[in-house]
Length: 247
Image 1 (cartoon, rainbow, N blue to C red):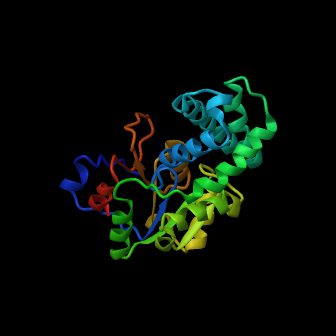
Image 2: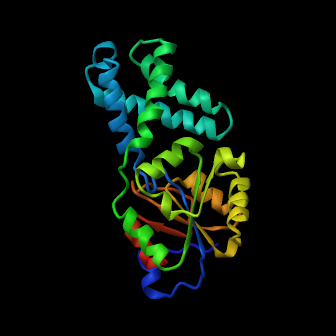
């Protein structure tokens, strides 16, 4: 896999690779998880009167939630905890930060969170434009996501993105999880795609980029937050619009 610096590469050389199947990640790549989660949690913060029970500062509450959600997602992706544990323990750990050890409240918060979150519609700038552009250029679009099956489909429908994708491959449907090679192999088999004509597009260096590298698939790192890493993806972009220069 050759590393291409998109700041200059595509202006100097034509794209020698012919891609047909584009596999997108969803959360943090197209669907703005942090914005949608913050809006959802703010509703729950008021509904469950956490401004009185936990802290008057929602921003502090949200900061703690994001930390524990990220930590537990990493444990879930490594197989250390189950999906059900992830769903309620991120709330449990957040509440513990404010000396609230209430398992029932944690599970109620989790249930409401998963009801409301998929109804949110915020996506990253240029998401719909780039997906339309790619379809118009006859690429076949798919999703590979570690998110939960029911939740991910709800996100797609409510944000009006479901019609863009031919196949949606989740960790639940494939019985594997990014960055494991099995989920990528399953996705290519389902799509009828060869690795040489496939491209992974995602924001997570470990799950998306290293996962694609595990099956020798080219990958685009969507670096929304200007992260620094030793991992060398095929392409790196900081805005979805830059896909037009690659594809």
